[in-house]
Length: 150
Image (cartoon, rainbow, N blue to C red):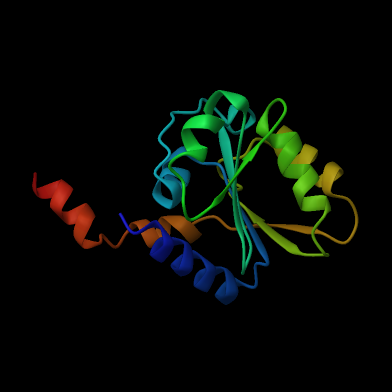
């Protein structure tokens, strides 16, 4: 799978929608962009988050998955959180200049959105980015078609 091509396509859609930073934690969308498969129960129990900016990409996960990811992930920077990934995501977002942050509003619980909103502080705006990665997933590349044929 050409994950870098997928990341580039996501960045193009981010620009179309006026999203400066994209947060991805839905398992299917996260797997599409990274290859990391994990069936999370909910957004509050997400095993990993992807933070995508126009020029950088981070894969934030706990120590449970970090070693496996660090050795295989080439197109996103592996980042280890001390506990659950969400606090590390919030810390990373706070370090960014003021931004319009897109998130998967249909996946994230109200509690997670509140934690994000309170944690990132002034200057940042949260906005729904529902359907952004799903739009990319609709079109199958050659590798996906080969898997489907098998």
